[in-house]
Image (tube, rainbow, N blue to C red):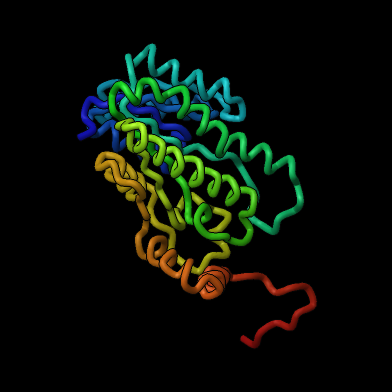
Length: 265
């Protein structure tokens, strides 16, 4: 279903974005990847061509600047002649710990994780309307449920849900045939900081990437990966919110506060 499609993948130098680029290449798509590090993107493009991509190219830069986000879309129009799928996957660096009160960090993260998504979507819409294409938004359980130690990150993911869910409603009202797939991801093996405190095994990034592309190709409204650790807990959100909060906290191996007695061995 994705052979010959023209696709932008952001945040594609590592992790899930890199794996999506490789899956798209195997399917014979035209791939335009973007991220901050040019050297890594060059390697990704080379690998995509080896795997059978119809074409592969890159644009390097930072999504802190919405002008760059718009530049990526213009590059797709120039080099690909249009766009069939926009995969928004990039994310800014944040800390894993108690909220430290740094408002400036929250603002910067909103620019990268949210406003650049809005800017790219706005710029790409004319091409996506013409191709009746798809928008794929990589989000997180932290955009559906409040998680500790991810306050700034979680705020940006909740913003994505609000914007793209509302935009989907407007597309329906206006009979715009552009699908929006919101991807709700659980604990993936790209999140190194959380691996030390979460009491569960992370899901593999390559499998996650393939599931995202399947959901996008089928134009699904929302994708949950893995289902058992994402969709099922959300069923508790409205009927047993405090229980869900407790279950979320119970997933963490928290260090004992200073001066607390150590448990017996």
